[in-house]
Amino acid sequence: SEVALPVFFKGEALRVRFRVDLVCYGTLVVELKAQPTLGKPDLAQLLNYLKAASLHKALLINFGAPRLQYRRLVL
Image (tube, rainbow, N blue to C red; front, top):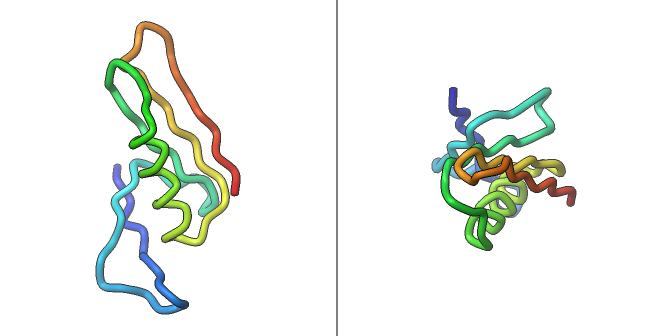
């Protein structure tokens, strides 16, 4: 199920939350998609999740393409 990640700005937690698909071991964000192809907006969304949650690793997986697509991001 989705996980609500706290968003930090200048060291302070904001009231808003990002809703990511999975967080594994408290360090890896996993975002799942089902669309024809992955694009720059999907990567930008994942990068924003990482920065706002102060995490460093993410995996973007797309099941909607003819072949499985994935991207690994490490900050």
